[in-house]
Each structure stands twice: as C-alpha cells, then as structure tokens.
Image (cartoon, rainbow, N blue to C red; front, top):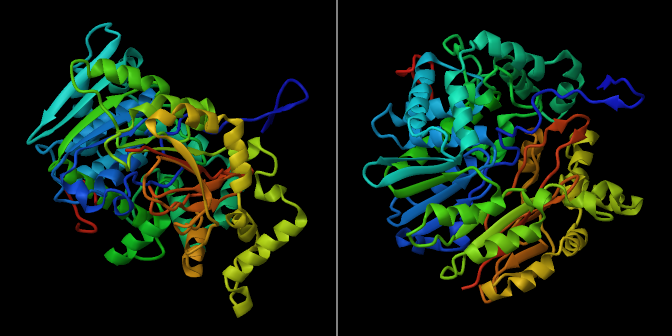
Length: 553
C-alpha cells in the first residue's frame, strides 16, 4: 500500500490485475459417473461444455474420468473470454493430441511447464513456437473471425472460432523477442517483492515447515520441478505467462498449489514413493501423470474439441452460427465456473437451461459463487453471535480429537477453517431468492429445471486428512449428505450433495464432484474466498528421466 496524492491510501498491485492464468479452485471433473451415467457411458456420446474454462485442469480431469474403453464420441466445447488463455488452450490442446510429436512423457512435461513455469528449455520453447506458427497460419487478414481446424488420426480434431483480438495477440506473442533475464526482472519484482514479505510469511503459517523450502524455491526459480533438480537448462521465457512487453501477468498470490487437490497429490506421492518433504515435487508428478493419462485417452477416443473466446452468455448464439447446417449441440454437462458472481445466476439459467440434453436425465448445469456470503445478512461464519462461534469451535476441536489428548494446530489455523462447521443453508437460500433464481427456475420449468433442498451436512474427512489438508493450504471435503440448494430436474432419482463452508461462503457441491477441496492462499491480509457450488440438473513414468528436451525431467 502506498500513499496517494490525497488523504486516502491507494493499493499497489503486485502482478497484473485481472489475469487468472492459474486456477484458484482445485481441479474437478464434471461427470461423476458412479452417481450418474455409470458404466452405460462406455457407448454413449457425450457433449460437454466448459463455458468459462480458465486453464485446462477441469477438462483434463473430466476426460481422465472416462474409462479407457470408452467408445462413444466426446465433444468438448471450451470457452474463455481472456484472449491469452484462449491462445494457450488451443496451442496446448494441439500439442497434447499430436501423435507425430515427442513421446507422451515429454509432451506432458512441455505442457506442464507451459502452464506453470516461468521458463522452458530450448527444446520445449521450440516445440511451443512451432505450434504457435502453425496455428497462426489460419489468420486471414482483417477477418472479424479467426477460424482454424486441425485434424488428427484416427478420429480427433481441434477447431476454433476466435475474435480478431485473439488473432492480434497471437501475432504479438509469437513475435515477442524478450529474453528470460528480461522477463525475470518483472517476475521477481512481483513474486518476491520485499514489500510483500509479511504476506508470504503469513501464508507459510499454513504450511508444514518442511514444505516451506519448496514454496520459496518455486518463487525463486519460477520453475515447477522437484527440489534438487537443476534449472540451468530452462533458459527461455514462457511467453504464455508474460505480456508481449515482458510484463509478468500473474498476481504474487497465484500458485499452482491452488489448482490441484492436495489429497490427490498425496495419493500420487504415496503411489510413486516420493519424499514427503517435497510437496512441489509431488505436485509436479501428479500434474504430469494427469497429462499423460489425458494424452492416452485423447489420442485414442473419438474426440472433437471446439474452442471459443466470447462472453459466456453469448456463446450459445455463436455456437449455433459456427455449427450452421449441422445438428444443434445439446449438452450433457455445462460448467460455468463462478461467472454467476458477475452476471448473476438467473441469466445463466435462462441462457443455458434450454441447451441441456433432454434425452439424458443426468445432464446438468454447474455454477458456483465465491461471493454470495457478503451479499446477505449473516452469510459469514465470523459474523455469527458469540455463542454460535463458541459452538462451532467446540465442534471443530472435538472433531480433531481434542478430548482424546490430540495436539491441535495453531489457533490461527483452527479459526481459519472454523466455517467448515457453519451451516449456510439459510443465507444461501436468501441469496438465491435475492438473485431471482426461484423465478428463473419457474420460467425454465418447461425444460425441467427445478430447486430442491437437501439434508444436514456430515464431515467424513478423517482428522488425519484434515491435518494434511490444513497443512497444505486447503480445506476438508464433505460427505455426499450435505445440505444446500440443488437445482435439478424433475423426476430424476434422488441425489445427495456435498457441503463445505469457508470464511466467506459454503462450498456446496454435488453429485457432480467426488470431493471439493480448495487451496487457500492469502490475498493481501485477507483470505481467499471459498466457493459455493450449485447444480442445475435437466429432466428427461519413469519418475525422473532425461529426455529429448535436454532437461533433467
């Protein structure tokens, strides 16, 4: 914070505001087949829409949730309004589907570093640049629509319809010629700014001591690798994380830790026999394995990927124009991220409710809010009367085994997660009412959208897992018996939901997600908000190896 010319303070931004190139919600798949289509999905065509995709983590997890013997046709519609993310999505998907390029292991590592590292090896950078050149060949002068298509054998394709500003930015990124050292100057000014040391150390309170070394090592190098692996060969800047003028685009609170479930990362660590001390190393191998699994499926399945970069509520219209003369796409799942926080849930229900697949009783529209609790009275746990706060504190300490003599973590961490014991059903119902959701559901009744309430929550995460998650900056998942509002179809079989609450908002989740966890990093001196998820249903390797890229991984 710095002093302005007036009396009021002004805040200095560390990183370029408005660029969410790394997801701040843990990756989740949107099918949850065991509670929906089940084994019948093997021969079923699926049409899935990620209407505000951000990075590709949810796309990757969702495709990986399909069985390897899946024989239907899977159509993925991927949209993000941010032009830099749109460019990254098309480049990385083309790399992942290309059977003529490097091996799956090396491709996965290249994509991983393109997503999460500030620099790449020369070979990785060349692979990325070659694909940029190939994709840029489809730009046609001043055409208002940038359209391209690449077909892969045996039966996959990537096709995109982007506005002209995406094509313009693609040219700028492709032609940018700054060096790694130039980019590092701005990255370090933002990610390790001396003015922000207090915030970094506050964040470290929530980390196990042995994991703090990896955190600071990642900030220092900007490369996502296991500790001890040399970074000398990473000598080219990752242009996907910089502007064309070598400006670092991410906020200093951004971290790949936020984007992946720490319990799943821990499972990967145990399966691969990785050292417990290196969380970022375990994260590296977890993401790499997810990418390798994605490659195996994407190159085998009958897959169509359609990419856009427009406002979520205008996407259906552009989609119809792009598919003119073909059968109109109706969706088995539509995931909309937290766009409801800016547009309101009612407009999304009105726009996307009619596009759900009426032939699939499991088709669903998923939304979540990160901000609802601040918009209604008594929506936050910390705003509750003292007696309720005391009750939640007793529930939490009892749950963690305080009565059995367990050593509790620091009080700051207990308070940080106290809202997991706060029932947000009433304030969330009020929020939905204020936002006109019941009315929107009534209007959409003809397409089978409805509102249903569920029972009280239960926490099934073990205390040991709670300690792990709390030590890895996240929160516990809740059993599929949670409360909340589920927007769902008529006549579909009863489903249960998860519910989890954070400091600002409950994390309602789903039959759609097996677990909901969230990396909780400090943003300034206030904690990140936790989302509440709504569901709208519709009726009717070698661990370390030296490869062609010349890196040690």
